[in-house]
Image (cartoon, rainbow, N blue to C red):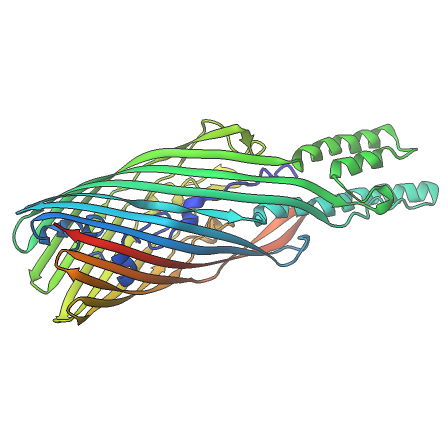
Length: 491
């Protein structure tokens, strides 16, 4: 009972919004990526992010790439628990990112290239839960059976003493209103220097400055139980217990116990509101190498070091969710180290195939995960590091038109204990496609669409009600659509 409402009112938003990428990292960073799903060996302008060592392959001069994606995601949880008002109950989360930018600039001069990139390396959207989450409702749903079990002995005692059953235990149902909205975005500002050592080998060194911002707004209010009509019907649990305590003939200890419990329930089931913000910054060094043993073949490696980061909490108008958020508190919010490898090969003059592989060192990072209110390291909740592998193909159907398609498999390695309605990681498969229209040698337009299908996940757990542990089960599901457009400009 002490955990009602304080169980959680926050969602681990960053993990909720991940699209292409690992548990907290976005790699869907250009319209070209959306239409191919494989860019780790890119020698185009988006190599600023995917393969900075490959920028030495660009022509001398200035190059720009402007990209945007519109991302729509469903993030749903279905819960089975005997005391929910509807069983099973589906909680629908709507995640949207109408603006997901990718901006790149490169200046190439002979063997040197300097570049800048700006993009959402984590998060990047907003989530809305009109009906809350299981962790909101499950604790509240236990109030009814707890009252039923606690008041039954009192009914029995009064029946034995007077011959009349007052039916105080006949509490049925509950209701409340809730709403939760959150946003999260980790913006990356990346700077690279590239040196073309030989015609075959290019190297790069870079750094990314990351700014993180999470916002949480929501409420839970008007919680009521359906008491017997003769005692007033719908009312707060505290009000009902005070009504029971006013029954003539009760001894002083029973009255005091009922009134004390009523006061506790007033706090635990009273209106709660949150308006909080978390902000932080981090720094990511990175290294890259590009190898072209022949004109038709590109091989690339990139290593991004871990971004150690903490976010600090601020509270607006003292709306702290009933103590859930603490002003000026900090939690870890790392981004993991990542190893990226890529290869592309022109098997025909008009056909290029590519392969990309990303490996995320999740177990060595700290995502601020908590179990039973206590922070835990990633290696306690993650068994295997996340990885993804992608295949892409591009085909010149005409002088100015290239069509493309891709497939990406992402494999999570989290343990069951990691999963929760606030933060779950699922294995997925993505298909994408689109086209590149080259208006001329200096201007190209990329259009793409991708759809991600996730495996279902689940978690079994128990909910304490009195001395009993009642079984419950959550099932997790996501699906994602991305629409993208970008323009590449060379001067």
